Image (cartoon, rainbow, N blue to C red):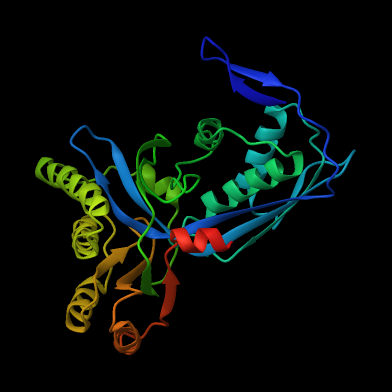
Length: 311
């Protein structure tokens, strides 16, 4: 069953055509933490997404007469979402879901949301229909807070409410030189934790969000980097990163754009602009300097309009 909006705004179901495919395929990107995350004076929790070229993929194979199953078996959130979608559209509940992900769990890379969005897209692909994004958000809201990556590009997102505030457009072409400080973070538990920000800090977050929106409109990469760095500093009160000051110093000394963090995760990184004339020099120097901190260094790349067209 498909859905559309009736004249009274209610969702109306319509029959879906029978599929002739053997399987459906879906994919979703992850994130490198957030460009900005905090709490506004009205107590709304928000974030600004940072989509990267790392993905979760899902293959959906319907099998009549079998219970719906998933591999790896621990991907219970994606299995729960798949059942919810199939039940809502009154589709057969038998089959198998196979998830593969480049995103480590508990690191702030949006792994569980990427798994779920990839699962939804695999079901969409098999039955050749589209789940309205608002409806998908309703389904995911029943399971956990979300990173907003069901929306293309960079967006301002109320991640506890699963509600879009504003789309900022395409992401600039960034490289992130990142390190993982170790451990895992339970995102659900993290989002239940009271945020210890003061009234003045919440007012600063409001100002930073306004500045971020303006910086995107003017394509001011240096300004975006400064906002990211300030957000990382403010987040030390909530989930401190051991090497934040080191990364800020290194970033300033090699001429990087700024420091970005997984606010509810374990990654922290430096931003470089891919089209900087000194990009290769800064990439090499930054990598060597970060290795000196005793961690493996990983390179991540933002998803731009060009990379979206290529995939």
